[in-house]
Image (tube, rainbow, N blue to C red; front, side, top):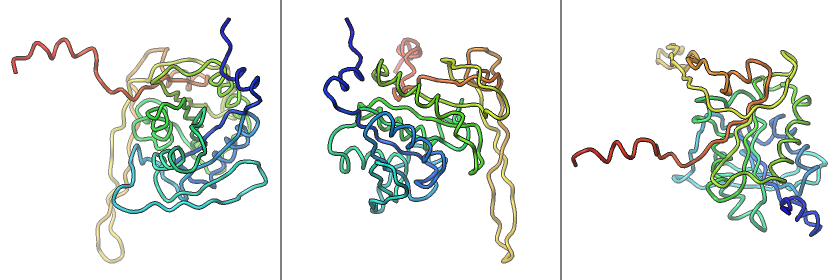
Length: 267
């Protein structure tokens, strides 16, 4: 008989230790919602950026020092640290310096905006989760398809709890990090959860060139999201049709399917 990891923790009267982080900053409503859910599931330690770090990808701080301060933002039982670094920095610092033992789970988010499809590459939210995965810690990144600071996270919180419970009970496969995206509940009723593949989509960048009052040119990055994937097993299809998408991602970037072909080259 297989006994789940969560059941073992309960039998030992030991709460799961959960590391919580994000890329929108420690005061972000999405993070506060995630903390609220995690407090029902385990012992929570928060290590999050002191300012927004969206689009930082897996950047780490190597040319300057990191600052980290313990703070108290609400009446919850969690311990919280505000860090001057990137999301990946926060996870590294939390695991190696701030936590008293290796966490049982790392959750990142809830991001204000989509991290589906190719967005996962640029995402600070998912890079934080991937950093935990690299260090052998089960990890999940959560994102809501609403970029507004005033986004309503309340309707998706039960799903965050359910997915996290399943991850604790069944264990995420080794080397895999879950990328979870939620459609906006107010725009369409959430129909359920689908395990998906990443859609084959991309951004076509545009730069809005402007001139400041001093005559110096500057640029704003804009662009159009192009989804050429017509499959119904993708995260983009699921989200468009009212489903929560879960994409199992991996940090092993080896293109295994090409190794045999490349071995035919005459070096």
